[in-house]
Image (cartoon, rainbow, N blue to C red; front, side, top):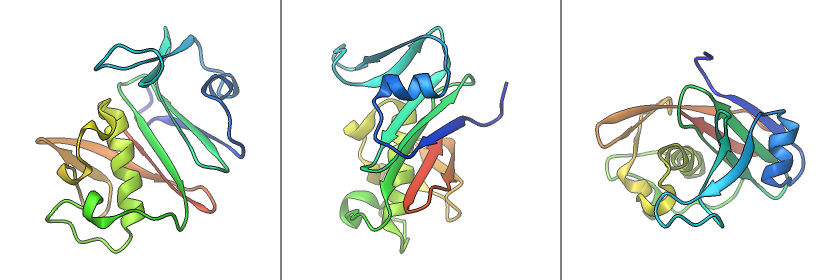
Length: 154
């Protein structure tokens, strides 16, 4: 088993199904909300495949997958606005709030809660490599995508 998730970046705004095909992943893609059961939204899953997460900006689409457990990915165009008052944990002091926002979005996707969990409750390490949520540490790595800020969490 790979120790880190795999990712694929496509320079286009692709549908979730097209991203799964581009990554040549097995299984049938479904969206299922853990909270209300709706198939119209929620975390993507691959029937019989690895854990997956999908993110898009206006210019790129990113898919992350990992057989080892839940994974989350997020991407934003460089220069996008991220409000510090909705992003930073009270003990955090970071200049690049967008990078913090993207990492926290990836964490929330890996947790499967999305913005049902307040991003301010997540605390990132100074190096951004670890996120602490309710006493649990998750790995968070930056993805290098020109003109974008992106991260993957597992």
